[in-house]
Length: 190
Image (cartoon, rainbow, N blue to C red):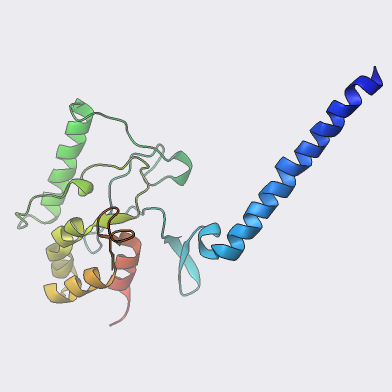
């Protein structure tokens, strides 16, 4: 009986070592060598202290900062352990109410802004963790930021343009700006 199970147990042990130790160690080692910042979580530091990740959105609520895309993650906004969208269809009353509430909050924060509200400021993404907003969303918030920080509009526009990223490969996606990087630039001494 012992000799019948021996090949199966040896194969099990061999595959366990290969799949649970050697392969993950090799992939992690290659990742650290080729993409060190990403493997470490793309942590953004200020004065040597971590302030966030460039790959996970932050919940900025102060009128002095650019606001990111709403998050539909469970537990709390931008919860990296609960990534996922709300999965609400366009006719779902809960989504319609949430969008109306978000539009009202944006209009209350900047009552003089009569521009159309960009969709990414009022709808969550599929992951719920978007760290970036469209340029339209950044420019929509420009008057509020300039007023709250006592800066000329042109100075805020320069920051948006300086921190914007073009389409991936020149044709995929939309031009965008990382909200954390932009807000850190606002706080940087001039």
